[in-house]
Length: 238
Image (cartoon, rainbow, N blue to C red; front, side, top):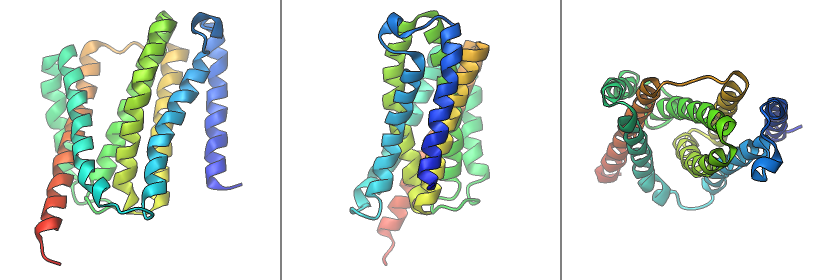
């Protein structure tokens, strides 16, 4: 069995395991028209599409456009995370932001890609963010399935963008690294969903703001660093 087939089988098994707690919470297909495990599978599928487009395109089409837009995408994702953090707790945001930026700075030269630690820091931040989204989605779905479904649609689009950004950062190191990063992100989301649904973990607004600010700080720093490296590479004669 190929590595791709094994990953797909593992993902399917993980989603299947979620069906039992879903029934226990009383949220069925009759509530919203979709069972929660199906919603989770749909989000994972859309997220995989974001990374899959990058994996298919890299090496087959000119990559100059993708490399040029990547810093903007990462920076925008970071700004979005910080915006959410501020709405929850400005004080926690002021603490989490420099921590995220510091992570990128401290380990800036220890990585396998051409942007130093950018790819690794982004993978860690995005996986953390996806896990947090999984916890929040599961808890919201438990309280109100219809509202949870609306949230799932938002999460799906955001997840695709984040996965594409991470896959783009790892693409220069090879498709197997990019594929592994994409799978790790999905695992983070499924673990978050399982935690939020099975254990019903509560996340305080202050803790959520701190985590979002940390994620935003990492992504902002990575966006700036990648953009600077692309600019320097473009002005230095070959």
